[in-house]
Image 1 (spheres, rainbow, N blue to C red):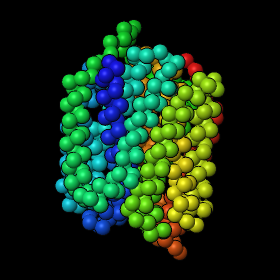
Image 2 (image 1 turned 180 degrees about the vertical axis):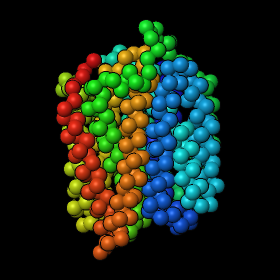
Image 3 (image 1 turned 45 degrees about the vertical axis):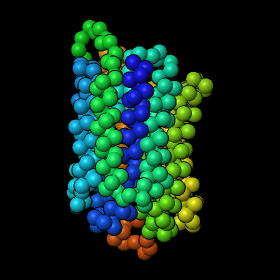
Image 4 (image 1 turned 135 degrees about the vertical axis):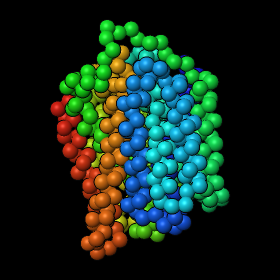
Amino acid sequence: MRTGLILLTLTYILSQFYRAFLGVLGPSLQAQLGMTEVQLSNAASAWFLVFAAAQLPIGWAFDTVGPRRTTSALVVLAAGSGAWLFALATSPWHVTLAMGLIGLGCAPMLMASFFIIARGFPAAVFATYAAMVVGIGNLGNIAASTPLAWMLDAVGWRATLGSLAAVTMVCGVLIALVLRDPDQVETKGQGSILDLLRIPALWLIIPVVAVNYGPSASIRGLWIGPYLDQVHGATTVQIGNVTFLAALLIAVGTLVIGPLDRVFGTRKWVVFTGVASGAVFCALLAQFGGTGIWTAGIFAALLSISGATFAVIMAHAKAFIPPHLTGRGVTLVNMFGIGGVGVLQAASGQVFDWSKASATDVAQPFEAVFWFFTIVVLIGTTIYLFSRDSLD
């Protein structure tokens, strides 16, 4: 099982890459396929929305047929084929469809790891182990920054996507061959999603999971490229350097924040502090990002701290989930987390469009997007203040 968990962790690098690479690839797609900012936003949100919609059936599949067959099939048939379609895209809707397929294929990757950790390891170390998976997976964010920019300059985006499609399919085949499903949990009843929705504690955690990852994923993975390009005249490599810094911070931040629940004896306040910092850095980016490329880059990178709290949020929620509903429980929470990103990305595209119609300078629509994220994070963290802590 440990070998399978290592393989899932390495495969999860692809998931992190695919959700973030439009931040660097965006200008190339705008130049070659004529994609607008709103079309890029829709393509990015398609990944997250399809990913989120798949969570509940995937959770059911984990609890019934196991993560091995579920994950391997989706990685090969959806993520692999989606990457091939992206490589062959000739119009914006091809990119959107491809991103949706890739999102479906990536949907089980992290949750399969969480499922195995929840079933095979002590509950007290869930946040630490989950953070290790997420932290290592964030190497995908790093790969989607400066290394991606180098590869785009060297071979172009089509050859890059073709190579990634091949790697993705190989990973799916290896999962089918190597991963071992954990033992089934004996239960007094089948249970369902409705049982999970009857748990009041989860409803006060869901708002913060819905906003914790949205700002960092959307700005790093979508808006920072066009923003630095249009406002500061940044090159592809400069954009890659900024996203590299952001990816490095979220990777290190996840590994550092993961064990803090045991250090401070609280999950709630670790999460609240980390997520609330996202509102602070969004506001700073909106207010001062126009003063210089590195000012904007540093604030955008520091947003990663809010996204680095995900493993602790999941541990907080898992404490209230019955063992026989582990698969459905973690995927339900993840559905709101990833779905929140998809909704916020799509909404941010509309905010950009509305602001652009009356903008007096090129920076104003981007600043409106950053203020939008500031407000939604403040709303989510305010609701979370009423949640019950957990350390089980």
